[in-house]
Image (cartoon, rainbow, N blue to C red; front, side, top):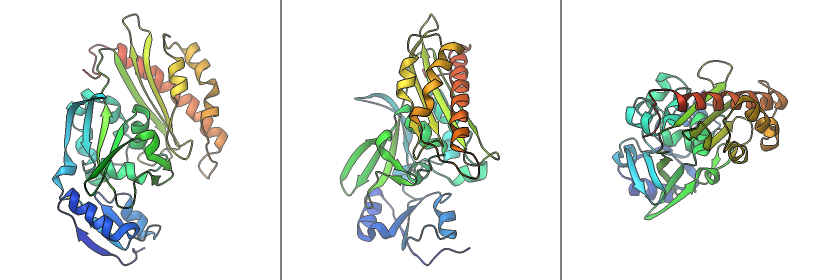
Length: 301
């Protein structure tokens, strides 16, 4: 299929992009990688009157470690290509769960063009990057004209394909928290029909262990089992002080269905999605624990 007719504009800076968004409002969409937007336009599920190209804005391509009031974070510009982030060894050392999630995203061809910001703004509830962002408590920086605001991931994702971004706002940066401890491990896993497809259900976890091997901090998230990614904070907290042994983990995950709201479709029933969530959550917790204990440790430093 072919897209509906649209007009084209190219922004050369973030203020310029914001000005164009302000001028064209809900009739405009930003074009970066186009790996989500362009297929939707081809199927006429999206019919923007204006496409604003932001590919040449260097400010959107930053990727660096930064210290702030909330501790150390890895800052990625919204225009950073997914493949560049996945192959960045500094990112892998600082936020290993980010690379692990990216390894499940699409294919090399799509990641060559796809951007970090594009995946987050598209807000598919089964997508990997929104799940990692929600699980780690990343912050999304939004800009309109000269006004900037920061939104936590748990407030950024509102519903399928809907975020807290206003029509005249541009996502400029994402701040990924860095867990600066020695014994930190993480893991990501998912089940999909084919490699590279969106997940039926995905799960990720990150844990910190003390020198006795007991959990002192944990983050756990599930994608594909609700209208947005779900951070299972209560379950993660219940693991504090434990050795993350199978009996304890299984007991903690017994109520996982109470935190999810999956739908049934041609790929899986709601009941099967809850089953997958429980199995995958146990698996990533086990793998994250093993990662934290494995020498030489490769987690955040």
